Image (cartoon, rainbow, N blue to C red):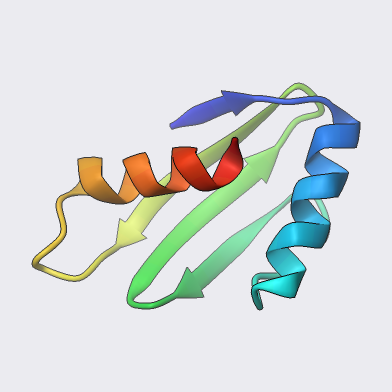
Amino acid sequence: MQVAMTEEEFAALAVRAKAQGIDLAGREGVIEKMGVKARWGFDGAALTVEVLEKPFFLSKEAVEEKLRAALS
């Protein structure tokens, strides 16, 4: 999934994520929390997130929906 955002929006997101124990340092990485593992990258105009692992009882769509809600 991809979400358009500015540098300023990404910086604010990184601060909010860090408060939740998620480190978005740099321009790309892998995050893991509550059984969900994802690869992310920020290119200056958009944040791209790819779900790598998830609990069996959650669909990929459900995980992406929660991520989109958290990013807005």
